[in-house]
Image (tube, rainbow, N blue to C red; front, side):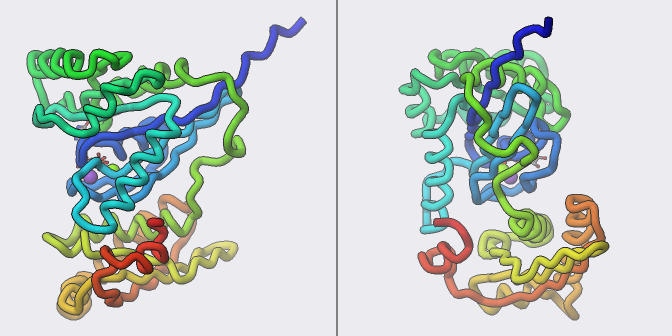
Length: 298
Ligand code: GDP
Ligand code: K
Ligand code: MG
């Protein structure tokens, strides 16, 4: 006789924390795919991005979220709304901090302190950058700050150190529930979202100061044939001067973005990609509610 099948577990695991602590790196490590873009700059992630890990008897739905900040303009409000919606849905909360994080009081810590019905794991990331004593001190600090947390764990998302354990603990905290998404799905976002993100990642890596924060990417065409994907993307900036910077002398800068983004897309989609890039101005789109709706922020 066959043993009873194990009950199916499914649920939402929210990855939250301040900017740049390694939330997106962690989600990519947990899902085993490069779904979220990663750069050394704060506010790289602007959306709630689902990364779904499927097993025979489980479905873990991770949410990568923007870093928690004090909103300064409309786009920030939309970004924080993604964070708070992911907290509301959470069956498990992964609160990521890093070894560098300043010990300052944050509204989010206050909120987590009051969270009693959802397990919270505090993940102290980037321990590859610290010695044992520093790590111990941070773990002790967080245990004291959030006594209601289920556990505090040291990890290095970059090296996938400790991430297997995180996965195991998250899984054990999930309720018995049928899958929320089809079992062959990896995310809820369409392919063109990831194409746009790959262009945005290169903009964050190649330009300085205000330019990355003023840039948005829209995919105007995504056409998949048997052997090639044709993508037409428009980079929107807020001012004409920024358009000049994006394009660069003789178009060299834009060409770099295009080449690098295309290589990334070919890896991601496992197909040859033909990428066309255009640059347009959409004045002050970050504070323009219509533009934000159009770009998928509300
Ligand atoms: P997010 O803003 O919280 O999503 O952080 P990211 O995942 O974008 O990472 C921010 C920066 O921290 C990037 O430069 C990552 O490569 C780096 N990073 C992430 N995890 C680790 C880690 O475990 N160790 C080290 N040394 N760097 C990391
Ligand atoms: K980042
Ligand atoms: Mg991120």
